[in-house]
Length: 330
Image 1 (cartoon, rainbow, N blue to C red):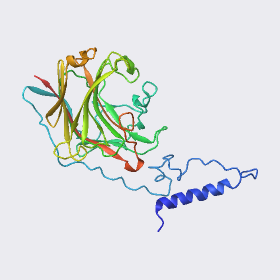
Image 2 (image 1 turned 90 degrees about the horizontal axis):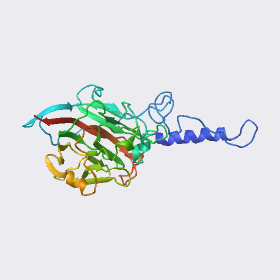
Image 3 (image 1 turned 180 degrees about the vertical axis):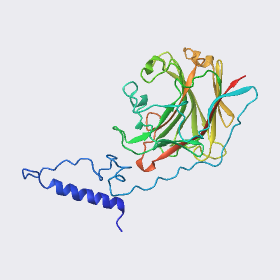
Image 4 (image 1 turned 90 degrees about the vertical axis):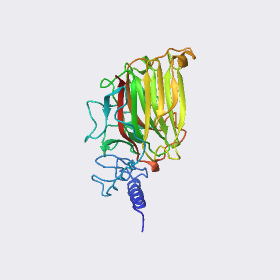
């Protein structure tokens, strides 16, 4: 039996051969093909690449996301703290009173989001949806506006900005090499339209970063400095997975305890990194982390940090977030 994918390509070359035999003046010049159901690009009313819509080839059903059933969990309350903001992701869709989308490729202010990333961010349900009390952000091998991948990036700018507290994020990571998860915070004055005005001077708190090429490692990082690139500095520490269980297998909880003049990073309540004014002053730079900040969640593809190139065969792949909670001292 001839595989369906091979049948599509044989059909494509047969049609191309017929069209290329001659032009209207009898020459042997090939005729350029427009969008079709055989061009390996999602276009027209196609539901996915070369299938669905008016294309005869039906789309294969999407593979279900493997939502974890086990992993670490933190409490809903801590002694001396009050829960001031949270999202349990148990609604039918993303809560627009809490979150907004960053869309596109970052241009013109921050093209490729400043990191040579290879995805186009959308607000499509193909890339972000809620399921079983989880936020699912899915990166797909899907052509959009010159990019070969799509995904989503959301933020709380102008909706929730805060100063100091404990943050808990329960999440499970994707597996595909070339994926890059960032759960981080920007200064409340930072905007994509004018990124240089408050980066790195306003600070960036990376609660966690993860690369799909290394399923047993995450990073906790702080960026700071009066300007880029001459005075850009970052303080970063790795943390390895626990008990031989990778970050893409179960839920882990990624936390910070953020106080005046101090930030401590934790994984499953294990502290592994701290930054204070002495850290930044040791590099001759001011400490910017006593200001208000907001959240950004992103699943990117490719870019400066991953050393592995993404492979289309590894997609779609998803970041799964069970909850985010913010507590402040009473």
